[in-house]
Image 1 (cartoon, rainbow, N blue to C red):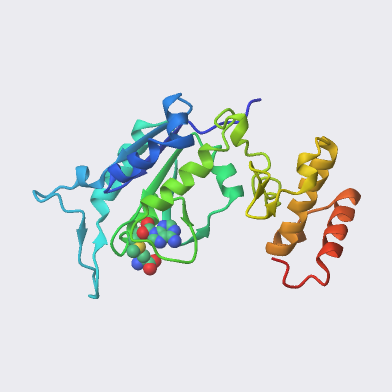
Image 2 (tube, rainbow, N blue to C red; image 1 turned 45 degrees about the vertical axis):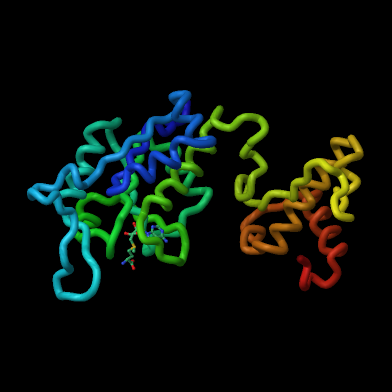
Length: 257
Ligand code: SAM
């Protein structure tokens, strides 16, 4: 049976124009243009009930900043649910969420409808989280002023993994994290620039040797930069030999960059 694939992403945001700007370009823009995925926005302001279309208010208990109110945000989330395929997964972008990752992008790409909620101000009234949010995702240990950029980072990484979305020239197969390893280094013309050379093997025309070199670079870079990734991989004997040779070429394992 074919695996379910994402059809629609809705971003709940006070700034739909920010989302649209990102969605018009590059891989995401092309995927939308070709109908591979639909991207929609719901603006909580359209669900505000007072005449000033307010979406925020002061925090109970005092303190700085404003908090996004329950009714407008929940109204937007429910409208998003109603407009898309059933069983939407609702994700809040939040610096307090689980760290976003390649594996999470793969998982989210299997949801028919993904609703991404972008906070602003001090964030959402916690009761929205309790009643509507399935999970919280963070881009990293820093604070953005709004969730839109984080939402678009999620959209971009999910969309580029969809089959047929990337052309051959942009293949994701060897990208960092795709098989638990970082990517190998890349070079393009000219072969020599300011005294810096392209590794000879890449110009040899020997495809087996090039593949071996790239695999070794992926293993070596991961060992140097993200040894935590290597710890959970089961390496073949060939991979182990390539990595040992890489380590030997670097000496004592210190200061390799
Ligand atoms: N008071 C919140 C806190 O300290 O947890 C931060 C609110 S932040 C100024 C406003 C919004 O930006 C958040 O509701 C969230 O949607 C988004 N945001 C900020 N940092 C983020 C991050 N690292 N990852 C994902 N979203 C983030």
